[in-house]
Amino acid sequence: MFKIFVAALMASALLVVPAAAAGKDDPSATWDLTDLFPTAEAWDAERAAIEKDVATVGALKGTLGRDAAAMLAALDKMTAIDKRLARLSVYASLKSDEDVRVSENQARNQAASNLYAKFGEATAFVRPEILGIGAARVESFIAATPGLAKNAFFLRDVLRGAPHTLSPESEDLLAQAGNPLGQPGSVYSIFTNGELPYATVKLADGKDVKLDQAAYTLHRQAANREDRKRVFDAFWGSFKSFEGTLGANLQAAMLANVFNAKARKFNSALEASLFSDNMPEPVVRTLIGEVNRALPTFHRYLKLRARMLKVKDLAYYDIYAPLTSIRNTYNLDDSKRLTLAALAPFGAEYTDILKDGFSKRWMHVYPQPGKASGAYVAGAAYDVHPYVLLNHNDDYDSLSVFAHEWGHAVHTVLTRRAQPYELSNYSTFTAETASITNEVLLFEHMLAQAKTREEKIAFLNEALDQIRGSYFRQAMFAEFLINSHALAEKGEPLTGERLTQVYCDLLKRYHGSAKGVMSVDPTYCVEWAFIPHFYRGFYVYNYATSMAGGAYMADAMTKQGEVARKRFIALLSAGGSDYAYNLYKTAGADMATPTPYRALEARMNRIMDQMEKLLDEK
Image (cartoon, rainbow, N blue to C red; front, side, top):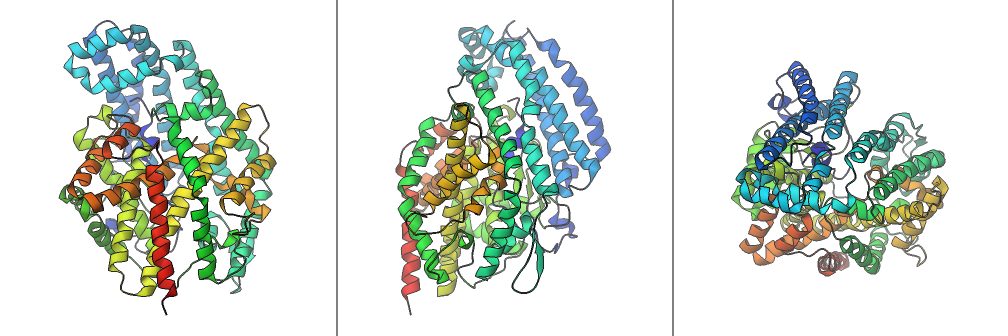
């Protein structure tokens, strides 16, 4: 409640490499934003109307404790504005991402963000005022007024935050500081997407390639090993040239996190970041501990990769190298068909939502000039369906991302069906499980359908690479953030060189450099400067926990059938009606214990057993 829902629900997935804009002119492959607003003029009119309504919120200050009816009326009014703002922001954001070069759309998106900031300032009094009313009186209001039931979770969550809620004046000051403190992320995006002078390299085929982010993501997978090294050397060399600038920028973001944590009387930035979800710190600590315990399993995977690449000196630039020559293609219709088949274990309620969305214009499918990269779901417009941004390249990665993002979309629809708007803001912790479970089931389906030894090896490798990228890599990111913030909290300067050292220690340890598993060129240790997720606090741990939780729940559905399926659908339908950790436990996974993480490690070893058996066949 009273959050920027767009940021919470536009969960990002694996980056997709922009390719030829095949099918971009097909209207059925683009979204229809008229479901949000019929015209840009209608959006402008609504923005002006909301701005007027935001200006009236101040009159509610001091009324929440008058009686239960007054509290309900005030919360309902602010919720109504919040819901309209979410719809306004979704339209502006989606329109902006259609073509980031259109300044009019960028201005509209900024206007929506500014209006959200005004709303945040206008509602800054709410939490201190609820705390001033006191738990006993708030509970009496909830008991006396059925209409407050939908607000009960929010009200009790506010009361939980009493030790970290400041005076109304201080809350207002922090609300105003939010925008400037968040600027390092914008600086990173503008610099790396538009102004960083990327190097150009000549590949083995004689082609000159300018290594921007999209080209790097494509050519780091080159079959030619010398090309992979050229790409890594040039790309990370570009970032190394600006190590100091990017280090100062990331330090500013981390210092902002430390400042907010201290201002709200938390012991650490990590504790502060986990508080909003009421996430027990042992979840993150257990994840990091279990991933480090499982590094020998990860090293087994890297050795298997070296075997398949037929190299004795595996290097970090080999991490994305293709291991098979299988290059199956999957167009949009294939992606729909295979996703439906793979997710059949969820039952008709789930697949009917997929069919409905597939038949309508909820997606923007293909890459095109100026379109935002990556993939996400925008599900914040409560009274409208979710929207799905893709950059579909007709390969397996695109198929996997398709299934992933539609997991977010179905999650959103199920939540809306079961929960009022006040309880619809689900956590990233559960959101990523909704999508990664889909990827796991897709793998199982594709493996079962594979007809040749080569196809089976290819799909087994995709599953292993998913665990590498979503589990080990994201856990390494989380450990980097924890270690770096700890230095900032001690007052140590986080120069670019220091951040590279912190990252390099982790990169080498995770990849077994000292054990001769994989060599890591020190130049590549500036990789931290490339990761946009580092400007969003500590949330990367969600990908790793969700990889473990998703695989655990997918396995439970395979073994337990209907019982586990119902638990999982209930998890998706719960939305924000409880804390994510509690919802997970109800669904059968305690993420503060080693069990789900060790189950994922066992799964990884089983997959490698299968792959090695196939490789040994003559």
